[in-house]
Image (cartoon, rainbow, N blue to C red; front, side, top):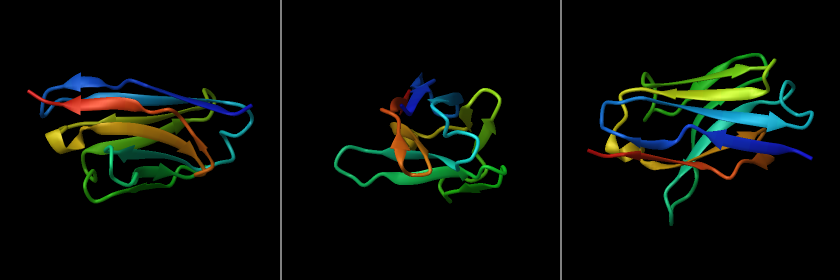
Length: 112
């Protein structure tokens, strides 16, 4: 059974940092691209960052230069380092494996 479990969300002030983690169980991690999406209630889920099994990364324009996605295949974990956070980054962040498997999300709130 495949499971993705996100952690690391919370409340942070503008300009602060958080690191999200997504731990994968099941034999899916090393061969699959991994991604982070975010979603505001009532809006479509949007792709934040993506990393291939080989480590190639992609970022949306609204996080480029501030967020860094990485993966540790030995730990079956993908990370999202978020720096210089802005109030508009407030959202529920979801981890996905190849767009087929999804975690339940972790809430990030950026507020003073």
